[in-house]
Amino acid sequence: MKVINFSEQNSVINQYMAELRDKNYQRNRLLFRHNVGRIGEMMAYELSKTLDYKVKTVTTPLGTIDVSLPKDELLVATVLRAGLPFHEGFLHVFDKAENGFVSAYRMYTNREHTEVGVHTEYMASPSAKGKTLVIVDPMLATGGSMAASIEALLKTGKPKRIHVCCVIATPEGVEVVRHALPEDATIWCAAIDPGMNEHKYIVPGFGDCGDLCYGEKL
Image (cartoon, rainbow, N blue to C red; front, top):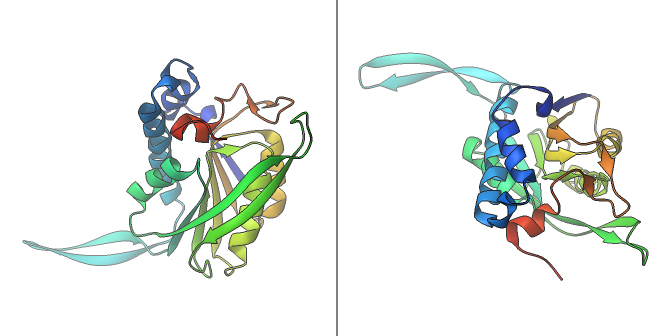
């Protein structure tokens, strides 16, 4: 399995990540959502290089030309609610993709908020059978929500290939998801941080992505 960590490369994604982490920048939810979306666009572009292509003849006003175009059928699925601006970034690139949505979220299982479980209660998605499945979620902390989402989406059919895409991850989360994926899958991360605190938040991270995008939840 391949794990791609863009923070190990020099690219403008590092600028967007620095702004997302900046607590002063985070005061503006619009700007925060915009950068999450821009990282989605950049990641989708890089992912597009791994797709299968076929040659198609295009007719212009002055002649014809052969162009290599993606032949994969794409299903872009996201984990609600934090994944929505990230998902939108992918759709700006993969505008012909089908869409899936999974409600999988963490729930603390003890009073101290140091242990978490995952609850999945809703999914709306077409079949993944034979398609390139791209699952996007900004945060890959414990990996529990992503693993639950993968399990739910695979019940719709066996995809041709799976890509898991996140803005920020931990080594623990990557390892959990690795065990839920086939060997030919790829995990894409804008950054992989060292670990989590006692409340299972990524450190140094940037906080709760859903809250920063849309406001605090009850």
